[in-house]
Amino acid sequence: MIPTYIVDDVGSDRYIARRRLQKAGRFAPLNEATDGLNFLATFFSDDSLPTDSGIPPLILMDINMPELNGFETLNAMKIRLSKGTSARPVVAMFSSSDNERDIQRSAATGVVEHYFTKPINDEAIQTILETFRARGFAV
Image 1 (cartoon, rainbow, N blue to C red):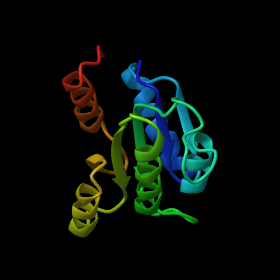
Image 2 (tube, rainbow, N blue to C red):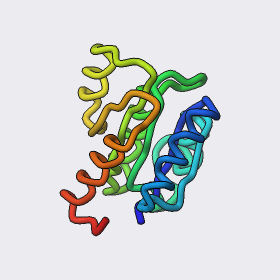
Image 3 (cartoon, helix red, strand yellow):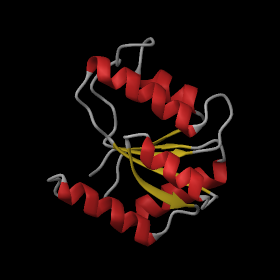
C-alpha cells in the first residue's frame, strides 16, 4: 500500500481523489490537508526540520489554494526536506486547469513528477502506479 496525502482546499475535489484512490486498492492510508500551511505543519515542526520520517511517498497537490498555493507549498517542502531527511516523495500536481504555463512551472520545481487535470482519473492512477513500480515498490 502507498501512503498518500491529498492537499486541496475544495472538499469535493478531495472526495473524488480519495474515492478514485480507494477504488484502485493500492493507496492507504489516505490523508488530507485543506491547504499548504496545514500540510507543512503536519510534517515539519519549524521552518527547517521534519517532525519525523513520516513524509508520505505520494502527495497530490492542488495548485490554487488559499494561504499557500501548491507551488509555494512545494517550494517550502523542498527547502525543508533538503535540511533534514532523504525522503523524496512522488508529487503529482492536480488542477482544474490545463494551462501550459502551470504545467511548465510544475516541471520546473524539480519535485513534481506528474501533472493531472481534475478530476483525477484511472489513467492518472495507472501513471502513478507505474512511477512507483519504476522506483521498486511492489504495487
